[in-house]
Each structure stands twice: as C-alpha cells, then as structure tokens.
Length: 67
Image 1 (cartoon, rainbow, N blue to C red):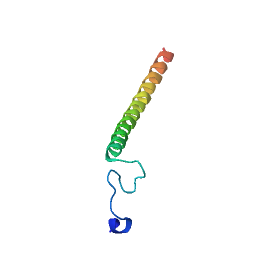
Image 2 (cartoon, one colour; image 1 turned 120 degrees about the horizontal axis):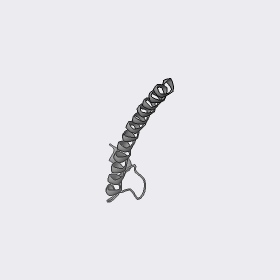
Image 3 (tube, rainbow, N blue to C red; image 1 turned 90 degrees about the vertical axis):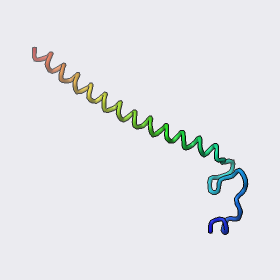
Image 4 (cartoon, rainbow, N blue to C red; image 1 turned 180 degrees about the vertical axis):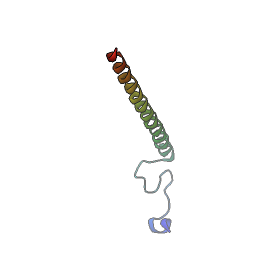
C-alpha cells in the first residue's frame, strides 16, 4: 500500500529517510548506535565501580581515624 501511495522506489534511496540516505549510510548509523550503546553500558559499569571504590576508601578512612 505504501508504494501505491508514494509511488515507485527510486534507485539508491531509502523511503522516508530523507535525501541523500543510502543503504551504506544507514548501515554506518546502525553500527554507530550499537557502539554508542556499548559505550553507555561500559560507562555505567565504570560509574558503579567508582562508587564501590569510594565506599571502600571511606571505610578505610574511618578505620584509620579510629586508630
């Protein structure tokens, strides 16, 4: 139905993706979004590790100050 409404596909273009978008550009965007998601996951893990280390340091300071 969509092709009946919008007409035939143009070679080298992706429907509803704007002018200049190609399959290879779309593939690059998908790779970039996957790598961004992986980096965000890594960042969350690193933040959690930093929080754990901060808690350990606070405990160590408390132990040293009691001595």
